[in-house]
Length: 96
Image (cartoon, rainbow, N blue to C red; front, side, top):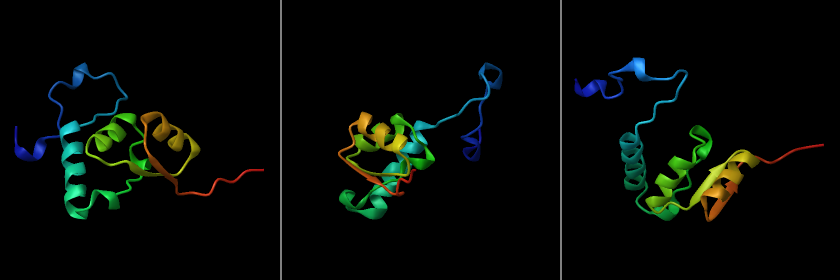
């Protein structure tokens, strides 16, 4: 397989669709790169709105990231369940 086709699935007949394909090694490399770019892990506060998954939150926490941003109460609850130590609700909740 070519280097540029890392995202291609060899046996698509085995997929139950619709489905979400996740590449943990790519996610881990992206987390490592984010840490490398910022330099100081205490300055990192990733927003979970793009993935909204406990698995990726745990991957980030395994790398020492404990500060997170979220946009909804449900996302804040997910971070709480995952054991995040510092959660910033980036959107002001409104209601009647």
